[in-house]
Length: 147
Image: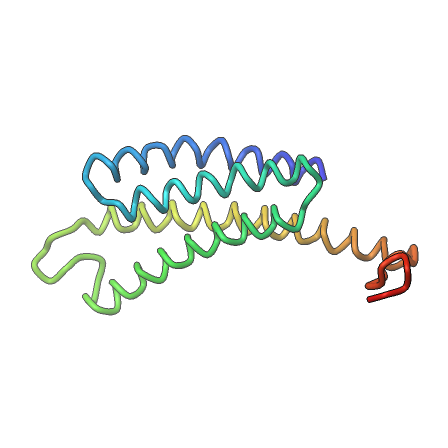
């Protein structure tokens, strides 16, 4: 649990540093989807850490998994761009293949980090369920015997 807590706080701090830049850039350039998505990712990262501190690992795992979905959606957009334009830049030469590659590497790094965090949280969650099942307390009934 200590490693998962450390992963959550590390992701929250690092994502906050990057996310504040995304929020300010989105507001400054009036790119509202960037600002909203950056704010949502920062919020979800801190909420995941908050839920771990309260002992609710399931909600924390859901938050980190949702951040993974944001990153996967962005990677899908990059893949569609390559398929549509036949390369890492548009046909008119606008764009930089190096910037495309660096962005891709950065997104893959973030995806790997959040996937590790999510998988570690799932491992903790499943091991806790396993312990409850072995102890005989994994019941779907209330104490009065009703489901």
